[in-house]
Length: 188
Length: 364
Image 1: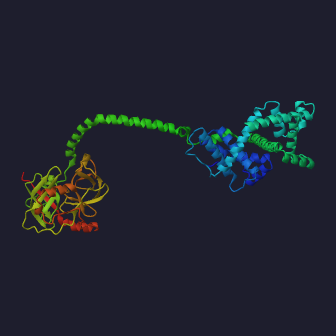
Image 2 (image 1 turned 60 degrees about the horizontal axis):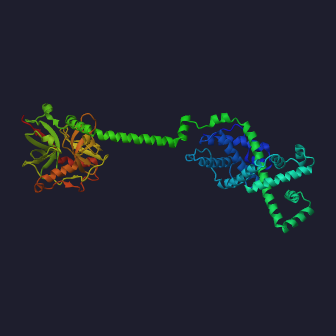
Image 3 (image 1 turned 90 degrees about the vertical axis):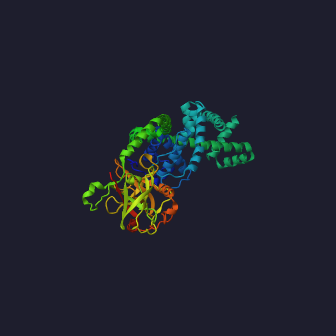
């Protein structure tokens, strides 16, 4: 049983270059191309479409980080890599929920991706720590930090948005927020 | 406090490469002199990387959600979900639970069954004895009724019954079925060399075995017996053959041991898949190596191809029951037969002089 993908498949090279150049289009194509494969795998192994979305997005993040870190070599097909990572992630989730993970129905070849996933887990922990720290930061700090560090807004924009009388005040406020956030982040 | 904030700002600018070369040099000087500052730089660097990573992933997730919204997940799910049926999926998901339930049911069935079994024993036994009575009617012995064929006999005094026997010694001891000679007034045996009068010297009705002795001056001693009697039992599937006289010429029957017990678990006999006819009774049943594994003694009426043969070990019991010094050149037991490795036609050629037609006369 193999899946016919309706959309045209991007070449692996296209995807890697696209991600390195932050191309939204390349990511889109990649995402649409291989989701059905992972969906099929999850549906046939005790999961539903929401599980498939979570697992697939996590696998794409692993791939993204690997490409961004420059350690990705096109030694295998992207498809195989994504499948293997998704599979590994799902098996782990199954084990965590103490569901049976024997008799896995496979649809593609499988690569050894344990090492990549270990790195990913470390990064994922940092991510979660940051998320928790930001959430417990409270307003207006959370928005200021997010606007500055995540949405890359200038201090001028932030100053106007929050009605600070001058950019220096805004800056001071930002650093106060930052200190608190760092404290939260490093303590957790 | 104020100083801390300024230091933060400088560190951030430093890490982002926003300091002028002079400021940068001055800051690096400060950093190498002050452990506290150095520590703060490192911590801030880690923090900034984490924030950047967080920002990147958040952005990526956002983009992926946009991409995800383009996919018709519902119809894909419909298409890709495990096919056979929901039932199968249910089974897959709950396999262990189902297995436990099934084994429980199985166990309770077994328990129930064994309970019933122990209560049934008595009834079975009664039924068994009835079956034994039935065997008498269903296993018809294979004695040939020659009377019915009186017309084509030229002999003045035709035999009433016929069967088959085979020599167990060179000096004229012949083994056959008890039922063949049971009601005999006089018995003759006949082979290629002639017809001889015999007398019954041993009968074993339980094992359906009789031993006859040729009492005839015209009888020359037979050369050494080519066959031996097999020690031990034959396995199911072992090819066997028999020679007998369902008609006036010797007839070869070919088959295999089909069950290690006879009718209704009769341990005295084998069940053999071999075509036999009235007249085959008392014939030797031999394996491919020329060892006698049994004596044909009956067949079942209702089942085709179910012939029964008395096991060879009862032949030995019978042999041991007669005075041993009276047997010269007696049949070997558990020895190598002279027929081993020969083709069937050669085997038959060598055996046929040792197989006799038994003719039974009954004055009544």
